[in-house]
Each structure stands twice: as C-alpha cells, then as structure tokens.
Length: 223
Image 1 (cartoon, rainbow, N blue to C red):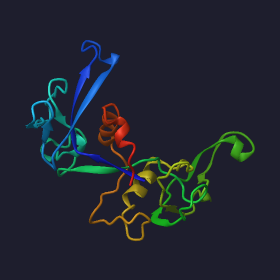
Image 2: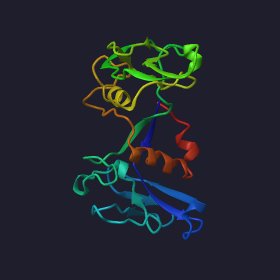
Image 3: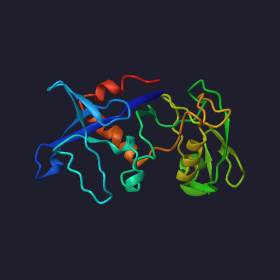
Image 4: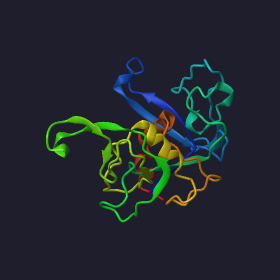
C-alpha cells in the first residue's frame, strides 16, 4: 500500500517567532508539474515559490513559500538538503512500516537477491528461555541464520503485519534498493522506479505535510 505525495512548497508560521518551540502551523501549496509555480487561491494568480540556490544560503521559510528540497534537483548546491539529481513531480511512500510476508497476512514469501549480513543480534530472554543476550542473528520468518547466508524476503507494507525488525541498517538499505529488481512482488521495474530507504529529507517532507491542513486528506488514499 503506497501513498502519492505531490510536489509542494511550504511556509511556516510560528505562534511565537521568538520561541519556536511553542509550535505553529504549516501552509502547503501544491506545485504544477516539476515547476516551482503554484495557484494562489487568494489572488487567483500563478505565483512562483522560492528555493535555496546557494550551498551556504540560509532560507527564511516564514516569509515566503519554499519548494521542499525532497522534490528538487540539488546538484548545483551539492545536495545540501537531501535533494535529487533531477526535479520530481512527487513520490510514492509506503503507507505502513515494512513487515514480514505470511504470518498474519496472505502475501507469499519471495526471496530477494540480497542476503542478510548481520551475524549476531540482541535477543530477548523471553525468546531464549533464559536472559537477554547477544546470539546468532535471527528473526520470526527465517529463524536463526547467523553466519549462514540467508536471502531476505521482500517486505510487505500492509496494516496489522509483523514489523520487519531484527534487521540492521545495512541490510535494510540493501533490501530497499532491490525492490525493483526482476522477480519482485510489487511490479516495479528499474526503468520506472528508484526504490530506496527513506532519506531524512523525505521524512521531513511527510512530517511537514502531516502538519498542514491536508493531514487527514493524504493519509486517506493508498495505492
């Protein structure tokens, strides 16, 4: 299940500019295509949002609308804000956290081309029948694998699914990168998608949108 996040610009209004910890509100303007232009409902005009143009530039997002960097080509400023090497109209984001196939869902387990690299992990005593300890790496789906090469199953993104925990950041990164390889369960292709572990800029993109007036609207739809 995926949610489409359209390209947008944002502006922040703080309740107390002198103490930003007191919170505020975020306005969002959805942009036209891959441009920085948006329709202004008040004036009825097409306006252009701003964006960072210099590496060391400090932008003031309280005075005007700025294009969120998660959608922009930041090649010229050395990807200062976690942008891309091209302009994006938006992106699909998993609606739920990565989970194991089977278990309490009907998705069959299909192995990817990537193997686990983690050899040990912290295991709770309730699983060991003794006390908490570092043991050979394992998880619910594959059992104990430790140093034995074991292919990682493609994760599922559905509600009420066992979370894909007991996996280190390296393996999480690698499995996300091959979700568009041949034989994947999603129908993705390498020519039409760039699957990857979410970047900080993309997490910020979702967080900002969730604090706008669209927070209930965008979570309603999944694909």
